[in-house]
Image (cartoon, rainbow, N blue to C red; front, side):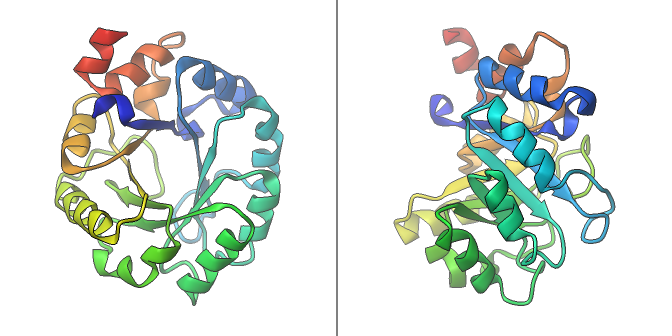
Length: 225
């Protein structure tokens, strides 16, 4: 199972003075996707990057850009992030008036669509739009800052969503973001996650990115490598 787990390092924990190099480094180190956290200091209490930065980073990797929009209202920004080169765009169900329409906008451009569940968001928001989803992103911390501790109650949510995905018969990535490290990653995988976002756990120790990524996949992957 660990060999099939996608690792999507969050560049929120990278050196912002050298983001292009950071993206190239994690690409070579074995990242499956590049996770880009977009915060607007409105929906969440922090301000990060906009579509111009995503566009500037696009030539540095052919890996999918896994873009998490923590912005409100979201609809006006979706086209700009599509144009910038996003491959997956994940949005929050409360970031606009009509989440179904927002997901349709993403899908109509040939981009994969994701729905994000905060720790306090119930899973019943998923079922009405599951036919539009390519990813479900479970936040195992409250969004807005990197380096927070994993909220273990979200493991039950991951298990429930795994069951919902299996019943749907759809090929949906179940991603987890927040406090993911070599220990909590194994709990997430056991609960049914298929993709892991990690920031500080990947970017700690320059030159160790490949080892850090293998450690997230688990002991078996590390031994094979």
